[in-house]
Image 1 (cartoon, rainbow, N blue to C red):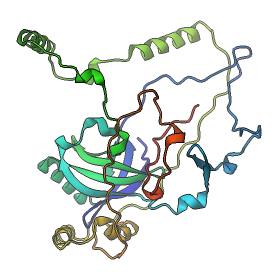
Image 2 (cartoon, rainbow, N blue to C red):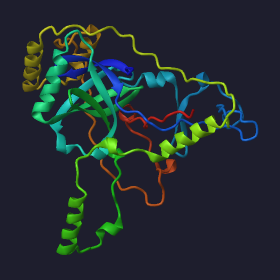
Image 3 (cartoon, rainbow, N blue to C red):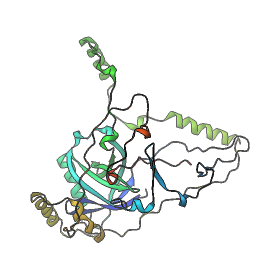
Length: 335
């Protein structure tokens, strides 16, 4: 596997250097579009509504509230906090059963990136022993995200979370109707469940559509039903070239200082960790007076509009706090 980026976990005053890897991948057969007449591959150009082809370097992003448009430049985005941060900040620890699986997004493996992985092992064993999830905030591809740290086998996982206001309310009038289920119906249903119960094994299930699609492609290749095309490859992401993390200087001292800091009502770990990330040590004491940002409070859930799937831009109120606004979910670019 190839790491996405390197960073560190801010666990109180303990710094845990890590490498981040995508834990999942798609098995879908990759297809692209061609012209049915000459089989030329379909390419896309960036064209503005006035008919001008635009270079990527000349493109800016904008927000449209339905009446007015605000253009945001690269300098505007540089004013936003922690746009390039490679720190996974632990905000708090919560019971495992309090985080609804509906909120889970993409999962990443975290590998210790240090000559001494003791701080990594300490955090892993602590999570397992206390049966807690670490609620964290991190930045990936210039987007601030919410997530959890949890243990799977012997690896710490970083799992992205949806923000509170991204989970839609289930507002269905059909659920308000009074429906009676008899004891016999429930008994028979439970009996059916029992007869079908087993241990989950993901290897038992396969994607038959993708398998048959690949067989179809192979059959056409074997029959000579193909054309010569130029192979193209997308640009590969460069791996971060940060240096290797250092040894644990004094893990017990850092832990003791973290506990004392919480007891005395000290500021959050973000202020203490800004100096640690540049030092590359597994643990250190706080040397910065920068105020830590408060954890994002979950927004109130509102019922979705009944007639539309997306929110209408014309009814959307301008954001009052742009620095805290969540970035939209990542989208894969079309091949």
